[in-house]
Length: 261
Image (cartoon, rainbow, N blue to C red; front, side):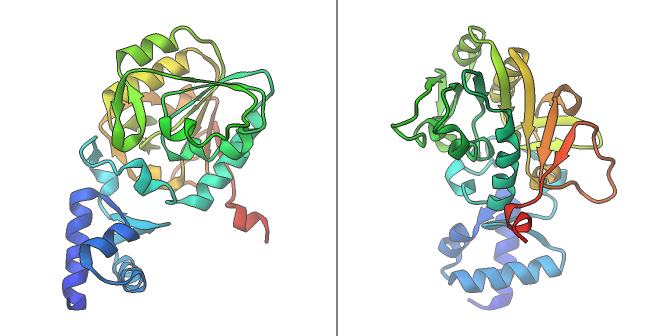
């Protein structure tokens, strides 16, 4: 396949999916990882795509509403923005205290808290089988897995049964993820209204509410708005876009690789 054709196909694929990992592009195009990386670098220099750790997103992704039909699976996002998510989790871990009951949201960003959770005597309530399956058998605390409609690609549950179960808990802290954060409107969104309703209920039941959002989330508007930035005690992120006003509750943490310099 000629390089020009590869570049065109990468753009076309990203318009369909909004985000693709390098591994997915390798499979789709039948070329090496190094070739894909060079192609992505060239497309980004031309302003046609946005490179992210582990993959790339469409340049117009921030202007398009992401829905359940275009949201990438959890497995495909596991290593995307890895260092950023590690830094966010390290900062959020300061909220963890033995004996507390926490809500831990689905998605990959909250899952980066696992290294800080695995030795703590805490109670965890989560909709995420992705997260619960990654806690070691030696975990000394308790974990409550919510029930409901199972979304296999996202390894999580949602729906009325999950919301009803949440009403039985009082949380010391809720760690909430999101698909999109709009700094201009102050809206926080997710790709499914059912999942959004569950997040809203968890926030309602929690004493402290922490939003975990890497900087890529500021380029996305997802379909269902479930909260305002101002409703959170903290918005923990690795950085904000240039030219926007920093929310009063925003905490900006550096990537771990930068902290070691």
